[in-house]
Amino acid sequence: MVSWIISNPFIAAATACAAGSALLLLWYLLRRPALTHATKLVLLAAIGVLPLATATTGNVAGFEATKARRFCGSCHVMTPYRDDSQDPHSTALAARHARNALFGEDNCYACHADYGMFGTVATKLGGLRHIYEYVLHYRNMPLDEARRTIHIRRPFQNATCMHCHSTEGPSWNAIKEHASLLDRVRGGDVSCASAGCHGPAHPFSKPAPPPTQEQLP
Amino acid sequence: MTIWSRLSGLFTLRLSAVLTLLGLAFMVWSMLEPTPLPVMLAMTVGQGLGTLAFGIYVVIVVRELVRELRRARERDPS
Image (cartoon, rainbow over all chains, first blue to last red; front, side):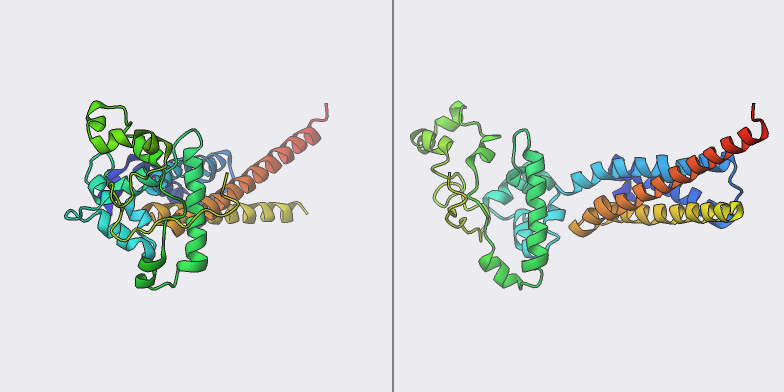
């Protein structure tokens, strides 16, 4: 527990501020001092400054925590995906990327996040939708059923892969399948993560359902 | 009336301290157990309680200041 707190400076700062605030508040509640200027200043620190610092650093730590594989895998229906991607012997696309230090513990977020100016906001809104769906529909679903039925909501975007694999490099274009499908890969007509190319991303991935009328351009 | 207001102010300040402790508990829980429920509760309920508590503190302190100014004016009307 202590090593977990010390390992992240934001968690360490937030915990220290929360502890300081709690100590001052307990002193005030138990000793019940007169409301002098000094007491008011102590309370300003305990009710205002330190909790604000806790909330600010805690928010940063919280947003960072939402990127971690541990966070994504904490809903039971996601455990097969988490277990596969952290399996050092798995050859699935997600697991191979998770072994890359650039992805590491945040490999779910690195591939499933939206990019661009509002990418983070869009990803967080998507995360809220996940929680809504989980609480209302999937919370009591048996794991076997979840593995059979859960699927990605929209087709996986090649733009996510192209965030790192730009499709511009000579070594990428030296592969004849890449060169022949270049325009279709860039246009998203052929998915990088499809079976026959580099997919599926997870051993039990299922394709997204066909788009509804509302989703069509 | 003054005694009642004074007692009420102290009670509200203690309530504010308790609310702050509750809000901090939610925030610390989310850091020790970073899963969806604690993180969401910290960012909504925890921070809401903290903001409410600080608002109460500001109201009490401002009310005290206004009261002191009024007393000072009554003592020295010029």
